[in-house]
Image (cartoon, rainbow, N blue to C red):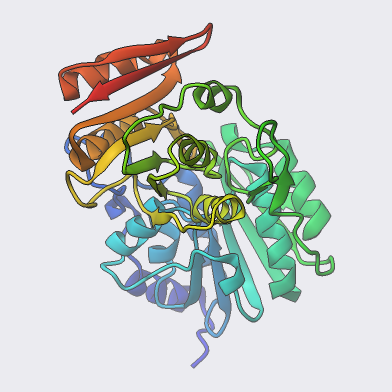
Amino acid sequence: MVLRTIRERCILYKMSSIPISEIKRYPIRKNETLQGWDSADELILQHMKQLELTGKRILILNDQFGALSCGLDGFDTTTYTDSYVSMMGIRQNSKQRITPIHLLSDLSGHYDFVVIQIPKNMSFFEDLLCHLTQHLHPQSKVICGSMVKHLAPTSFDLLNKYIGKTSTSLAQKKARLVFADFEKTETQSPYPISVKIENFEFPFTNHSNLFSRDKLDIGTRFFLEHIPRGDFKSILDLGCANGIIGIKAKMMNPDAKIIYSDDSAMAIESARTNYQNNFKDEPSLFWTNCFENQPKNSLDLVLCNPPFHQGNTIGDFIAWQMFQDAYDALNGGGVLRVIGNSHLGYQVKLKKLFGNSNIVATNSKFIICDARK
């Protein structure tokens, strides 16, 4: 049955949705001060209420913690996310009814509506749009949402280039929608890219959602100069990105087993490819949040360059969980080596958790420190 009136559509929408105020972040933390949705989610859902969605295929990209997926539950939706944390948040808030896909190659057929929370990373956004061109038809509509302060001018350029002419909504609660109807043709994505890095024989394959995917960032460059050599049987590259730290650790410790973990599925795939290009053995790979729920007392060395943001949210909560997960996973006598901006004071945080910390090296911007279990 086709629902003809806005009232009928709203009734179905309310029956099939979870109130946005009930969307929680993942993982659930005590005394959480951050909410699991924003005004852009709210604005997108208000707009979608006014559309005829019955019998239409809907694709949701970059949902943060499930506000969009849960709000459109009951329609023919597919959700894609590169983030393990987002995937778990969507599953948690939908009470396990919704399991997102995490590979762009898993997109199939053509979609009538595409809903996107515009990511901070414009290379990732470009990659998403290029893949979308292979799954849209001339009547397909793309609806993007963003908080105004995070809405990069480049996002309009990319939508105009790959999808079609853009228009915008009025700003409400500091959020805005961007609309585009599909007018272009299929385009192959330029990602992943190949990047040559000094002192490494093989170029690195970097997918679009990696930090500093075009070149080696200065923090990692400094960290590479201080990878320890020792009697390490198991080494974790925690928050591995393209896997370069683990590769250098393997070069320094040829008999060690290398383990990678990252929140980004693209990071895990990049690390896998880059490691296989350099070595004959296989690394262990964990697409996960930090290193949660992994075996305790199983690692000899953890190497970590913590991120200080999750999407557009800035804070040290990810670093703190990384340190706690590393502590749990390390053997007695095992070492966590961390690099961070000097002002972050990681050596103080590590001392609180481990009971000790030792500064290994510093420069004008970064500090590298150890903590031993």
